[in-house]
Length: 228
Image 1 (cartoon, one colour):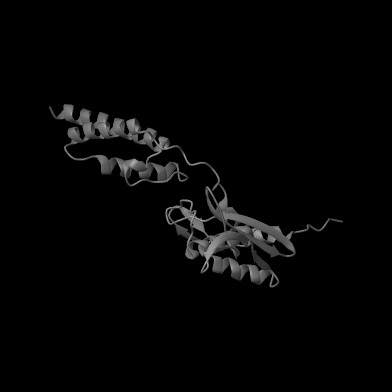
Image 2 (cartoon, one colour):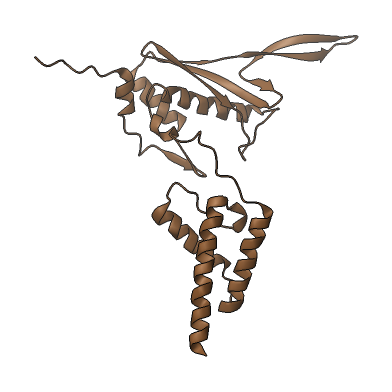
């Protein structure tokens, strides 16, 4: 007699295909909060979203004196930035996500607008729900550190090498080298971001484009000698 395999609620949620619902902003993929809410209620109509409120103190001026009053707001502010906290109770299990409030450049915000707070609450909800399994794979690798950017001296070396190549071929070779770099990335390093300008390079880009420039320079010099 074979044992019946028990499939947990978490496993069921991880198996839901959300690929057609995923959207992209910049280099990040995300599941819209409306789609996440729809799927959550579809699989548990009793699911509950809880938003933590934090006590904020402020001074209110009266006719003759000032009053210190408190107010509950759906975010917390620290010296380093602000954040929200959202919990999702799904199938009687609660998961919580703390999410930073960011501006459009993904920088921390210490005095957030309500629009920024609302966006952070929506993203925190989606990630809290992802801890229950829905679309969890979307966030795989997001906590990996970004490759370090190159130093100014390395950027100047690249520009000098491109200048020398451009002089040999008779035109600005920068755009062509970036194009070749992005093609190499697409074919062999899909996890690496493509670039549109040299200032966006990290150390891996720097090494790769250096090889491409050296290769193109050797080919151009060889072709020039053969013409003589």
